[in-house]
Length: 151
Image (cartoon, rainbow, N blue to C red; front, side, top):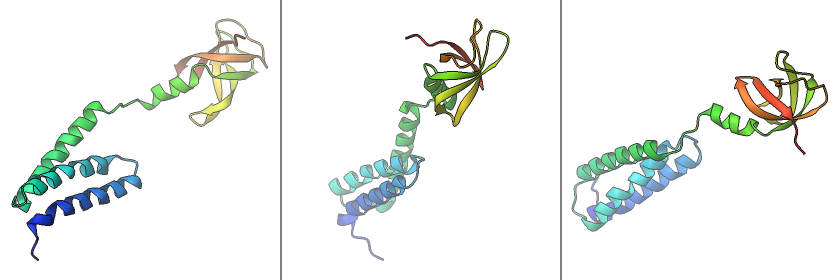
């Protein structure tokens, strides 16, 4: 099979487009930086059409490594627990069971967080059942601190 070096840049664009299509059907972002890196040998082979295919592949591999490094360096990586904490704080719910500093109550949230609408809760002072409360702090995995809802 003979490869025309003058149109090889077009093959790199096609490879990048295919990798972008693969990325559309996955959630890993793995193919995204591979597709972005395919632009580098495409530009190289467009400007210098006589560059060997082996050199272009080496350039692509180096560009992929650089893109992967930059992706890992600058992408925002939230931990799942931080995201759950952000969703929980400020949520309003109703106590299904009274609570205080020493006895856990049951909080029913209006909007489920982490797939749960029922959470254990405590408060600094006694709060009776069927009271609207707001989540002010997450104490541990499934225990929240609540306070009276401020109107």
